[in-house]
Image 1 (cartoon, rainbow, N blue to C red):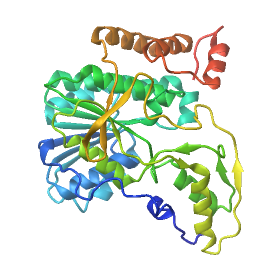
Image 2 (cartoon, helix red, strand yellow):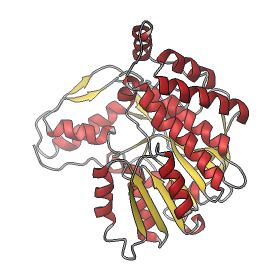
Image 3 (cartoon, rainbow, N blue to C red):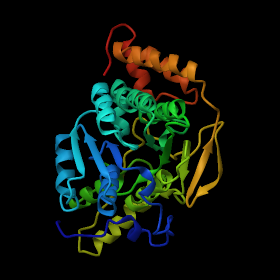
Length: 375
């Protein structure tokens, strides 16, 4: 059961047309120094490799995982011939570290990719989700605005649209933070991505591992669909947006039609069968806490504007009230510090009224009603 078989998304779906031209964007307009948070993740590490191989820009790559940052260092070793890359083992929630990096390195551009992203796990750990995904983005945006020397691009997710999970609502808060802190002096934008095929924890590597073990391949629901981008398409969308000097606000990349997860499983099983694997079955497990059957691209009261660059459209929505948002984030920060789940959910619903907490969180709230602490 160790023979290779096809797991590349583009090969599994050859009928899917390429979404981005080969000559997308460039790094010339990003300045001389770039900071990447969450640099050890699948998207950020692929982006860092592209920047490092195509330019001589100064790169500051930060991640809180020693293993991830060490692996990235080995991966970039052959490209970094002029020692233009600095690897920082640190947490984006460390305000003093962020302040020091911005003061000392003076990055012209920040790619903010640091985030927790596993839906069921974050349903069980709401304070970690809000602290890492939302409050860290808020403080990073505030720091970037303070120094007024850096543009900032947040990697967001379609789960932020009409959120039904802690991942979704925490990333929606991160989007609101970007909208709050953007200004002509420090322009900030967010890119709302779908699922990234072959990224860590995504269905392709999970299905491949299950097939290698002899199955079954687990699918949550026979009708579940998701929007997908390949890693190269994701990097293309990010660089396209980053290349737009005046970009500010929320943006939606072209992602094609949603794909049936069951179809992905079937095509991977078919590819494996051609390599003489034993017959593999599919097991329907049911939607997990926080899962949607189908993802949304836009929340209510949002619309999509005209194409601003190849494969990229602006998301139009209500403008944020800075004073009100500041007060709401202060409340979220305080209730997160106290680990008061009932107060947190109330605050989240106030700031993101389209958010509907899942059954798992509501049970945790009920269980915590007579005591303190949750996660």
